[in-house]
Length: 134
Image (cartoon, rainbow, N blue to C red; front, side, top):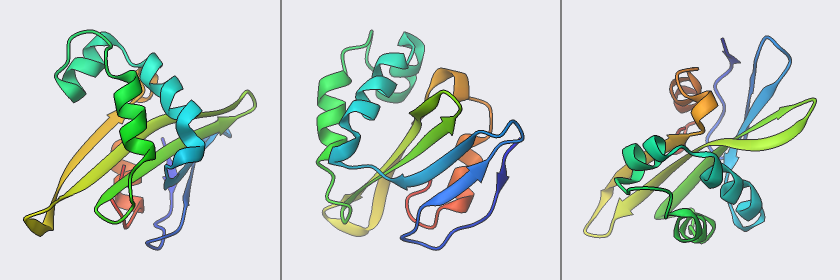
């Protein structure tokens, strides 16, 4: 399914698919606001509920704003950007937020675009990324 090689912490990772498409694993930041908004709009009502425990699709603006504001120290955000002959799109996001009173522990969350679920993106990218994983 995915041909992936482990990457060093602090570097982007590339995962290649047999069809020629590829995923870049990298930190998400301010420049990715459009990609994050697009991913948020593509999530089904069921995916939004499973990830955020919210009915409907009411998360878009708040979620995007929080992710692009991450400090990449206590709040890490990693994205999987897929590229093929049609262009690029953000297909998965992982975030890790360190507990203020327990800096050795963090809460982790992952969401993948519906068409990318059950394709091994989370498992493979998590194993390839030394940071928060995807």
